[in-house]
Image (cartoon, rainbow, N blue to C red; front, side, top):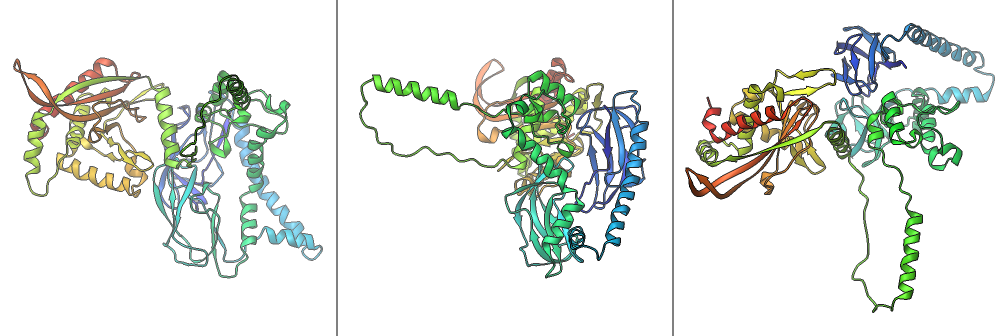
Length: 557
């Protein structure tokens, strides 16, 4: 079934967008999560990904053209599907909307002094002069909701254009959100620590004394909040629904209550026996997509079992001799901590990677004696500092140039061979893991790699790193050696085809030239996606990395 894709709202103030580049053409196959186009907003040029899968059947806005938010951008559906009616329908719907708007105005004009109720509804739909409603911005291309980490302004404060209003936690980082308006902060709609969807009301700025309630009602009317409330009620309904409702077939649609889900999500739900009515959608307009089904956890129903267990326990206690009294030294307690946006994103993406890409692992042990000696010599030079991890990054970047099969991405129908080498370096932060990216790492010297890694890692730990600095990796390195971990395996950071896990350097007896001597070794493990990297290819890549690390002088040439 064909799906209409509208011009998205990619920033809080965006009213229209310009298609900078189409990355898919009519006739191309589109997977959920594929980047359809680069769209220029009033603030930046951002990637727009598809929430549907199928064939791109129609493009409504050509490259360089401008279109208002929510106008027809493209249509995705089954190959050969006739979309003429949809295209005409989208155009006529837009015209009807304009007519309706005009017809709505006429009764108001005619009955301006007729009834008090008409005047009241008119007031509700009118934004007070000077009031500006600020909505939750989309601060990253994949952001669907944001958490207010902290407000830097309070109600009653004067706001200048460019002032930082709040720090907002996205799925990638915590970012400062600045005001594009000036006035007084009249209302805060999302408190610190609370999460709200993109485009929901974040704050109201305007003149002192402005009627905030009227502004909120006007904003709700303008954003057509009624359907959202209806959707929210729909999602909650299954929890309190009658048995007849609960047994509704997966993927079915009743006459008055439609469940929006992608075809793939419906198929997976049917295979797993999951009722779509029990699933909350994270896609566009609450649409259920593949990841929602894969991450779905049914509500636990353990009360009867627990009751039975307690009953058996009571019987056993009755029949056995009473034990000596025990006075506990403490009490059972637990605490539920709200998952951060970053934590939820890590869980979703790594889950998708682990269960979609067939992982296999290769481990080699490196002789680190020469690397230790070389690092000591390099670091003796004033103002220069190189780590063993910098050497690993350089070795991998050079090895990727020799083994392009490892520098690839799987796309079902095709395999993308990346001509550039962008190495992601995993960094542990309080909420989980971030992966800053070293662009064109193969062209960097050891000292340049070291300086860039320290700079990006510092930004990541301080939550000041930008989304652009974490995008585009073609290969990833994860190092837990500093924590004393000897060896481990990592989950591939998709769309990469491989990730290298680096362990600790260990001093131990080794055999050299037929004699047992004290040496220093380090184990590294390569996780590969078997769809793109065969075992022999992965082994050859590791042998090249080994040669570079064991002979650091070869990386200086």
